[in-house]
Length: 198
Ligand SMILES: Cc1cc2nc3c(=O)[nH]c(=O)nc-3n(C[C@H](O)[C@H](O)[C@H](O)COP(=O)(O)OP(=O)(O)OC[C@H]3O[C@@H](n4cnc5c(N)ncnc54)[C@H](O)[C@@H]3O)c2cc1C
Image 1: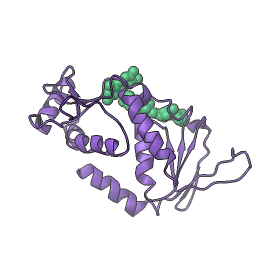
Image 2 (image 1 turned 90 degrees about the vertical axis):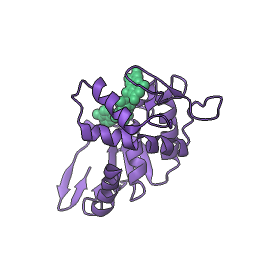
Image 3 (image 1 turned 120 degrees about the vertical axis):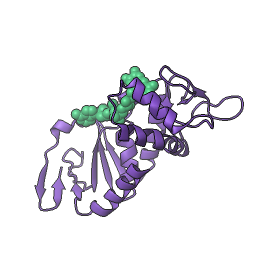
């Protein structure tokens, strides 16, 4: 939660000071469009970030292929989160640290394990449909390295479902425009005072 609060307050306090202006020269009619935020990539990270900052301004999502083309779209097994009463964040953390051969940054593990359940609920609220068991609750699979059942999944195409739901939310957000088949390397950037031009 700490990280989320930082993320949100960081955006709301600083976005005006670091306003990003995106100029697209590739619009067919030769017009120029201006955006407050430029996001590179349309996987789960880029789309989720775009939806968050779209609450504060206009967003250009720049992605090198079709919008759905990403590692996210091919993720299979699912997402681990503590959603069962007999499970605990401490147990999830311990499993993660052991599976990571004690090389993980403990604070990062803590944030991910603590925030995971809320992020899953957010995805569901955005329209992601995960498998349910006969009891009507989310079906939680158990995978290697996990001491509890905690893998939320949509059959074995979990990433495809997450990508679908996020893209649908992005398409329905009037503040977001997706520029497909645009490579980051093609962007020209320059700065004048507080304005960043792309
Ligand atoms: C086969 C497979 C199975 C997996 N299974 C799981 C699983 O079960 N559970 C799990 O948690 N994780 C799984 N993963 C890992 C998971 O998919 C990734 O960690 C996650 O999707 C990464 O998301 P991302 O948004 O950071 O990156 P991506 O989803 O890869 O998105 C990157 C985006 O950036 C764009 N891009 C890249 N370079 C440029 C450029 N130069 N210019 C413009 N755009 C660019 C890409 O087109 C893409 O849209 C799996 C991955 C694979 C491949």
